[in-house]
Length: 287
Ligand code: GLU
Image (tube, rainbow, N blue to C red; front, side, top):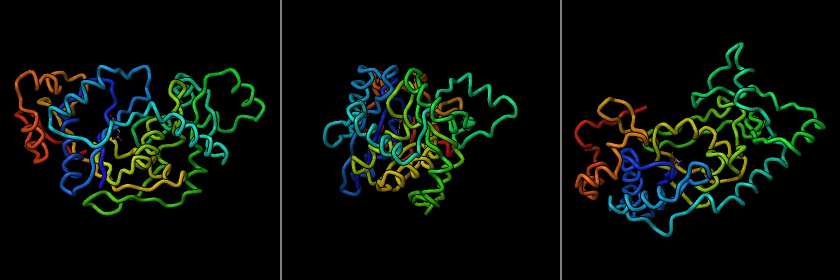
């Protein structure tokens, strides 16, 4: 068994991250397996080195020892580009020049259906651009790359995954529409980078928050298109604060740094979290 914890270094880790990391660490250690850290730092404008250092220091404080060096997504950009080339060669991706405002405008009337992640399904404006216009605009306009979902989903056929302890779940990637695989401002999207790295790291069990369960529809499709192995998934409950809302990086009181400063013993906290014993006021919410 190989599990991982994959923080994005865009803020301080909080109690919810500690819960997730403790579950992934515990599952690996209980099975005599390995636990690795991945730093999801492809978002160059929001990722910060001080958050990388703070995240590692907080994981060490929790006593969640990891195997090998932390992996950095920013050093795998060539892998993401190669995967995108492969999909491009098969006609499964297309460049999209739309701005957020363009998309909002084409969705304005009638309202497009929300996608499985709660956002709007891309209306497909750039999917059928004439070849000459596409070539001209590619040369001098900012663009992202989108998956041609209808083609990709038809090619892949029916997909499912094993949700630990719950059996097989059907994946519904089509509900997400033409998702972005490479962003205008980053060489890969979360979907592409995460799927490729989980496979490259040999992750056998992806243990992450229930807020990411919808993404698994897309990850499952990408695995199929790119010939990657499918791990088992466990999407765990989310930690909520005293106000009943799930924690966010802005919730400073629940930050691990604050708990540490308040004299909390990190190892005891991690051991409590895997047993679903949370500090007073906090609770777990199944999505
Ligand atoms: N880096 C992602 C986050 O912090 C988690 C990725 C994953 O677990 O798949 O939300």
